[in-house]
Structures are given as structure tokens and as C-alpha cells.
Image 1 (tube, rainbow, N blue to C red):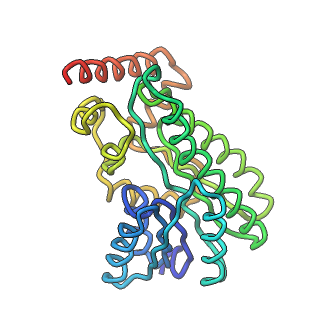
Image 2: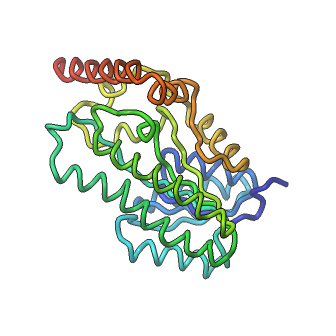
Image 3: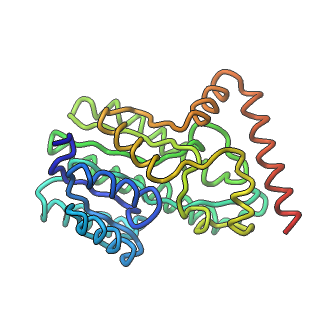
Length: 272
């Protein structure tokens, strides 16, 4: 038995990347997982993997930028299972471009998924959990919510906003039995680099990252363990905590690291 045994868990963006890892990890701990993704086939594959291993999971389609679809997803989950115990508000999209080369369409796409979609999830599920008197919302932010992130200004903008929403909502939620956490990881081995809006090949983009990439299984275990402990901010690995510390107490160092990252990007772009 674990804290997640027979708990109803809804995960957006659960068909790939971090959502997929979390879904599989939390299912191993006994949860019933609803995997929602804009790629229904991917969500179904993850659900199948879970059920083949003896877990319980179903897949559903969702475009998180559509409020009515999000409302329908939440309502149908409650109709089927009676409640939502954990909500991983996870769907997101990456971008890697200098800001002066970023179009307004790029901005709208990133903010539509990473901010509006997250707001829709919180707005709907938080109200449900207040009515229930219990529940835990886990919003996927990023290290980019804690420190500057050159080459991805729209992404950093959205993640700073998600973190502000999460920390503020956590305080309100304490009065109603609702917990709220924010995931702020460094670089994790997911498909976000391939699917990102970018003007560099994925391999070149990965080469600009100055830190070791965390394996998905490791990241998923850290996240689920931290949610079980009701941590407010889930920041990992060590370099992410160190970067956060530099940003708060020694900004020149954080700024230098950011400048070095941008130089790496420009060098990769120049090489084609």
C-alpha cells in the first residue's frame, strides 16, 4: 500500500515526456491514472503499458487550450470515478529561438498551451477540489520559472506565471484542504527538444545545454516521491537548486551562466 493506492489521478500531456513518466511511476504505486493528451494514440499506448503491467489506466483526448474540452475532461473523469485526488497539470510546449526572431504566432502558441491551458486546468480542478474538501494539484513549471532562460523568452514567461499561480494558490488552498505543488526541473530526457518550436536541429539544440540531462525514470521517481511529501517546490537536480540559489543571492553568476548558454546557442546557429 502507498499513499497513491486507488487514488484517481488525472494527467494532461500524459502521452509523452514527463507526463508519460509520471503516469507510469504513479500507476506502479497503485493509482488509477487518466492519461489525457492531444495525441490520443500516444496516450492509449501509455495506458496499455500500464494495464499490461497490472495497473489501471484509461486514455482520453484533450486540447488543453480549449476551455470547453478541459471542462468536459474534468466532468467526465468525475462522472466515471467520482472524484479527482491528484491533478498533474502538465501539458506544455517548448521553444528555442532568440526573442527578436520569435513571431507573435510563436508567442501565442507557447502561452496558449503553457499558460492558458494551465490556467484552465487549475480553474476547473481547483473549484472541484474545494467542493470535495481534498485534492492535490501539481503544476509543471520549470527551472525557467526560477532563473532567466535566454533562447526561450516566451517559455520562461509562461513558466514564471505558472509558478506565481501555484505558490499563490497553495496558500489559499490550505483553507479548503487542497494542496498545490510546482515542478521546477532542470533538463530532463523527454521529447520536448524534438517537438519544440525551434530554428536549430534537435541535436544542435541539445548540444547547447551546459548541464547533464536527467533520465526520465529518475525524474519521475523524484517528482512522485516529492508529491507524496507535499513539497511546495520540486526543484532538481542539484545544479537546478544551485542556479536558483545564484539567482536569488548571487545574480551576476546566474547572469553569466545565462550569457554563456546564449553564446552556445549562437555558435550552434552559426554552424548551421
